[in-house]
Length: 101
Image (cartoon, rainbow, N blue to C red; front, side, top):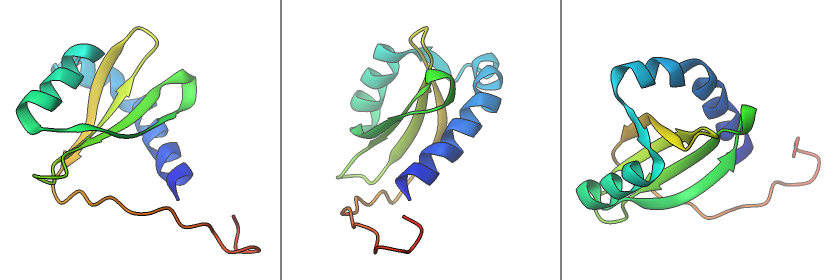
C-alpha cells in the first residue's frame, strides 16, 4: 500500500512540481520544514524516493491532525503537493502470502 501511494505521489510530483513552483508553493527544504513545524506543529512521519530521485515526505501533527505532503528535488527545493486534516498513523501489517504482495 505504501509503495502504491508513493508511486502515485511520484507521478503527481513529475507533473505538478513545475506548476507549483510558479504558484509560489515551493521554497528551500529547510525553510519548508521549519514553517511546517512552527506554524502547524508537523514533523516528518515518512519518506520515500520517487521518480527522478524526487524525495516524497509526509509531515503531520499528532496533536492537531494536520498533514502535508512535500516533494523535494535534487536542487533542494521542496514543493507542497497536498495537505489536509485528520491524520492518523497506522501500524504496519504484513501482507498475506499469495495476495499480490
